[in-house]
Image (cartoon, rainbow, N blue to C red; front, side, top):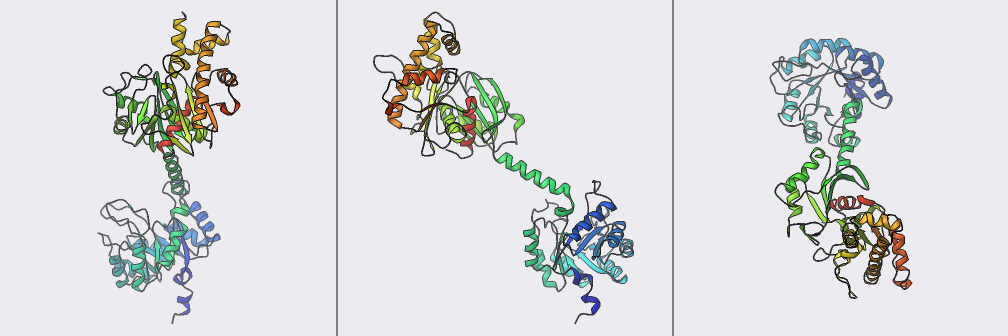
Length: 514
């Protein structure tokens, strides 16, 4: 039967409760008697049944301010011993004089200035409770044999040469609970769930420190978690076109940073992948995956030219593997127009709708999204409308007439050395030669879109690209479509993501979309 003193003693008062270790970061803004007392009072007000306090001056102030048992300790950095917690007999004396009800000391089997048994004897000589901070069950057995009143898992994971574990040592708690002494679980109990697990493992009480009284550490945990979450959703995305290459950090529909350079030629030459990787070298570590939207045919990670006049590419170039080797990160490569179609479906003007995307730019391409999936085709050709041959006595392909390459060629044939944007601008100014070129492009494209509607029957067609998004182009296209039977006429809208559609789509595909 326990005596009245034992029944009302510190171990009985702490049994089944939470002990808060109020030990601020050394040199931090809370490191001082006033800060320690403030933490201690807040902890007791919130339900802590005891406190673990370092330093005799702090112990004395907390004992006076708070009416709960205090576990006292002194920390020292010694030259000839790794033992830090209450290593000397005079430390025991100072803590007892300060009013600590329980005195904690390092009980590990390491070189030490004072034997564990001597420390326990000194604690008991002052009428205090002796708490052995252990790293292993062997430490616990030796401490109990020497007369320790309570054992703690405090040192578990902190005496080896390797990294400190992330989780507390619940196995040690279970083992210590078999020694016939109260067990205080301590060390990395930084969530309520882990504290509860310690009690289920046989602990008499749980000591929690950093998660409550070291805001610097807690802030660091949250900051790291946020940074990791951001990195997990951030992608390095490239859009490789005939004249320029865009590198961007993309998260969702947001382009965080971007860099645009002229596309390096010859494409796929020696050092070419490393050059692209170097464009984003200072972004290393900020992204989880890499997505590439590339002009031309991309099938199973290999890249080939569909129109060498737009971009000459070595046949079957291993784009995906070469870039993965250069960057050291997994890479997903897709045709640029297919990537843009997916970007518009996920985050642009066609969100959640079956759609066909047509980019009218230097070249002409596109992508199809049906049933929530990007159609790539058996050979990667799905959506490459620009290569469709013209019929009705017209020579060439759709691309040779209805996009920038064809419009610029027609302008040169008419004696005007301008690019497609110059043709469009001249048409807006009312110049007849330009009007004729633009109208021929629009009429040819309108006929192709009617054919697409009949073949694919999407809910929506989106027009993108530098020419397609130029002022008045979509309106001209709608006017040209007005001459067809209404049931065959597609719903036409301008794409919503502009020039960023490719990198946004490629980024989403790199994270497993499509």
